[in-house]
Amino acid sequence: MELKQLREKSADQLAEHLTDLRKEQFSLRMQQVTGQLPKTHETRRVRREIARVKTLLGQPQPSKK
Image (tube, rainbow, N blue to C red; front, side):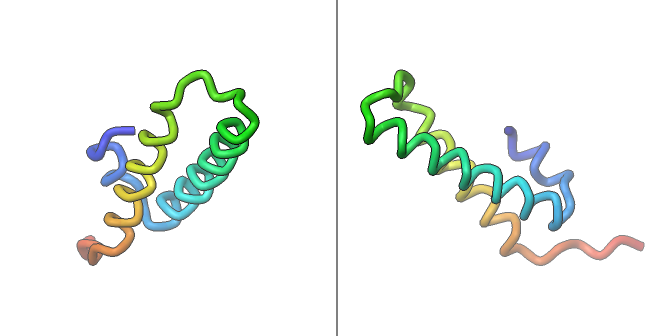
């Protein structure tokens, strides 16, 4: 997901997306351990997206008027 799309989400939506990404990361790790991971670049993509979401969650939210 692109950064622009992530910025449009609320904090609750970002937290939910982070949970989904962590589940996907766990699944990819299990596939890698068992030798069933055909696309090894997916692990890196998920790890980077988790970092993006955590960065956005750590930033102060702009107040809406």
